[in-house]
Length: 146
Image 1 (cartoon, rainbow, N blue to C red):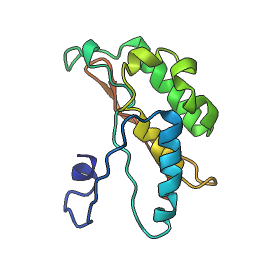
Image 2: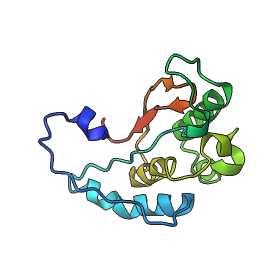
Image 3: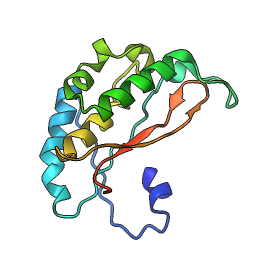
């Protein structure tokens, strides 16, 4: 789905790989690190999820952003831009409202996979995304577009 918006002409071959189940934060980071050498061969690695993903709390499309989603998204942005890998791995305990923002982890773990695939010297670029339906943050991060 993200590639439909990023590359609408569909000129790039795509091979989709699902994350194994079960997978935790450390496993997602390790999987990204295992895939990192592919970047040096010109392979684009995309992790698709949602920065917040609590479908139980969805509101109307015009709803204002709910505080817990804003606070969680802000915490993640700070951790990603500081490259605080330890905090991100332990986000379920450290991030405010983590379990409410992600009752299950599968929509957050692609961020850790993409972080694992980044090179150490690369800073993340923030692609600001609004919070829709009150609770769904679509903020994104990209590495390697220098």
